[in-house]
Length: 127
Image (cartoon, rainbow, N blue to C red; front, side, top):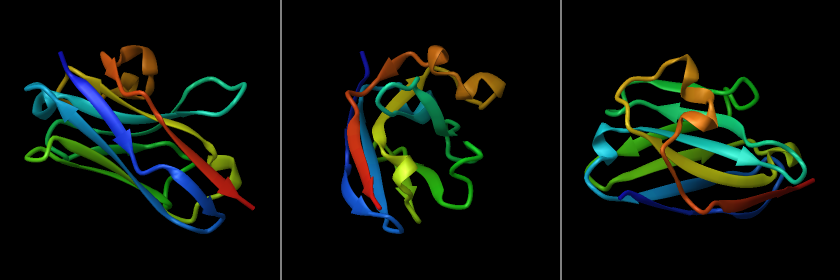
């Protein structure tokens, strides 16, 4: 069974940067799509970014394009979310998810399609 552990969250001022990491255990990481989602208080979990099994293709939500990027290291079994030019509206708990599928598709932005999740890491952006 795959376990995911997120890290790197914290408090940052608007305009600042953070890099989130998600470390995976288990043998299926390199054959999984990995995604980042976020959930603010009182809101549904929303898609942020996804990356295919070998890092060759990525997808980003419109709200973070030009500011965030996703990458992965299949040797370290880790996926990253680099967040730049952070805004107060980026404040949320960020979750890492994995899906046992190689290629991105239209449903890669749907949290219900992911097979396993981490516990989340809080990101707070102050104005």
